[in-house]
Image 1 (cartoon, one colour):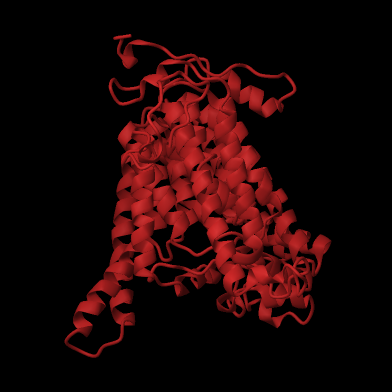
Image 2 (cartoon, one colour):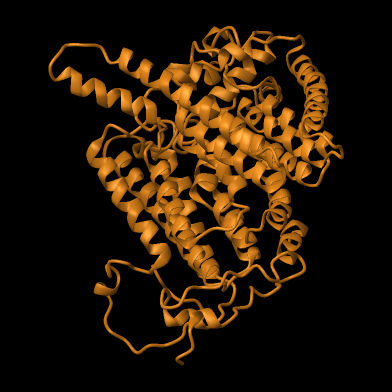
Length: 545
């Protein structure tokens, strides 16, 4: 048994039953040669044996997400007036020791989901499974969260409040949901910060929210569930685009699905939240794919529609112009650029105007001013805000000053840096093709980190596109650390935990341990220390940390 791990190919997972959803079958067809080769000496000998379908790992994550769903009834984004628990015999889970127990169960469920995700990642790196098990795992982990209270956020209540404003003839870009004289359950569950704040979302998403509230009215539980069902359209679009993006960008489909679909940022934040970023990403991924396939008219239209859901998608539009210009035949790159640019603008304007008019009933551009509303959030997860706060704390040791000037200056400098970075990436993308997609993706990540505010799920904007490229093992480990960290830095109620320093210290340790576990099972020997020595055997699926 002295052969090196990197001298042997590992087959993908079995084909499985034909009754599986055609989307799953379609994705699995693309995995014949997508198994990554492991590095010698880095994995346990048990990985020499091809595994069967990883039922236990999928079941572990499903149990974890079920615990998340149940515990969220007491520790998540619960309603002011809860029709499920109310003041009945189970209401104790929302208060005192009951609330503490709910939090303990919730974090236990989170740990199981992360543990299962990391195990799945090790199988991917070893080439032991193809794409089907990853997709099945992600869908199984999402399923219990369909009926869960919001997790680590309360944004969905704002979505419903702003949709109710539009439904009852009010302008969501002029005032917050507090002006509503109807639907008291909707209004009172909107976070106090957003009660009087104009909507920062695109008009098309407000139209979607309006349709949801038209059906669910004052029933908040039905509103949250229906929002998740609608956002599944975005997930389906992303799943359709990813295999095709991978084939054009040179990545590995199991890795891309593991990063973009099965990760805690997708399962817990985007779906468990839920967040409208999931819908925007669907249009963005298919739009970028259309550009790679030289269907540039479709690309510009789809990304513009994504912008009408969440304005962030607009970051990709200038890169699409370079991709279009690179595909034009002509002696002059300059002429090709202006030809592609004028065509893109000619498509963007009517789609933008029509989408706004259909959504709002007029060419109401007030949503541009609403984009400044999220800047009210100030915490150090946004890099420039953190720098400003750190400088303020140093100066405050010797002088009694206010923190706002320091944060304002740091944010202004970061905006200048972001503009310079974005322009440079755009210029480097002038040859179009795969490099342009990569430049667009890292620019989206830079916007998420440098543009206030930085919210944990914003990192998915760039990660979904970058997941389709080839990854190094060490970089995947870093993604694990980031994914776990940004999911945990907010409490399950949606309030930020960034200034609870002991809690953050634990979060950092957990994130680093999770990252190390991707490359080496049980890196500190914590589990092995509790196990009695036993005879080595080759299990059907290794029970690893």
